[in-house]
Length: 482
Image (cartoon, rainbow, N blue to C red; front, side):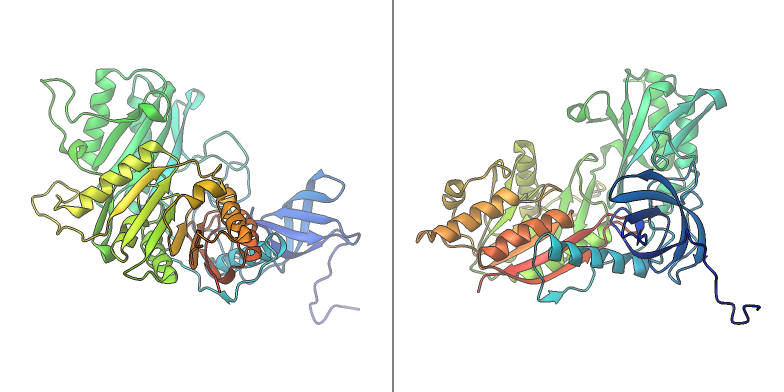
């Protein structure tokens, strides 16, 4: 009898996709309950998986065929995105509609808070989001000299491969940087040291686009001149990295007395936080200013949640260059910025001093900014992964904390706080509010469990879509002590 209703008939090997994990893999279960992770599959799809790895409790598969497609599936904007051989591994979610991407990330955060943290926020914050394209102001572009084809590739790695994708453009990079991918190829191809160039670290400031070239052998004067001429033509500031990160340095504006001077090399790399009249200088290797639109909103949101009062003392844990510290200093009586690196502490202090005095525009123009009125800020260096209750107790009482740790989270810090609260030290006053900015929802969930067990209430939590089209989840949570 013909199938007049056109109801799809599925093969026995088909799999229903129930959800998506943080590696952007579709998740389904076989009849025996065994979980299957399928690259490229989306929630609510019926697919045929091609299993290529099996374990006792799970299987890993690629997407072979879609029997029933999700309404949220879209054609990737980037021609290099996808799950085929040779595709770029940078954006794992381009086949999912941007709004649905946010929903997946929000659900992942809630699930981790529930299963790892065993906590539930009183409120789910509205996602912080910005542009879906041309947002990535910090990136690491790999270089590969393909001698057999007499060409150089510059871009991100292919999926699950050490090879570099053959990219002519990249829509997540700023438009002017994406347009430079092919000219950069020609530049590196022309260098004597082309086979010894490993990567380009990109950093776009408000007025400067900086590129750090990692080179394994010293560059000849001719190669250096080519870089500077390219920079002058395309408004690129060149930095060099001959060895480790400590070797990164700005190329001089001229190489010899007979060489022309290149003004692009004399500009300052920085970004502004206009709401607070703050300018933040930084180096191209600093992990900051990845997504400027999101960063500005995130700083404002964090301070709003912290609700600082003019008489408050605030501690900014893992303060970095002062991205949150300096804006906080415009709102309260005193701020402590604490970071593990002595060098970062010094540079954060330099940024504080810069913003307290009249300063030149980042482009080196004559105009001056008005001094920024800030309270006293004390920066100090401390290993926050080994902090003890005694060390925590020795600090000045702070009514509010802002915590912005790396992926490892702030377990020792919150554990030390919980211990002091449990022991009921009469001379220790725990902060009344804590805002936790996280780049790893799993460690946020773990630390949230410690704080809630210590007596805090998780008032709100939500995602920060810092990296659209990727599976990376940033989030922000607010805690209060009753």
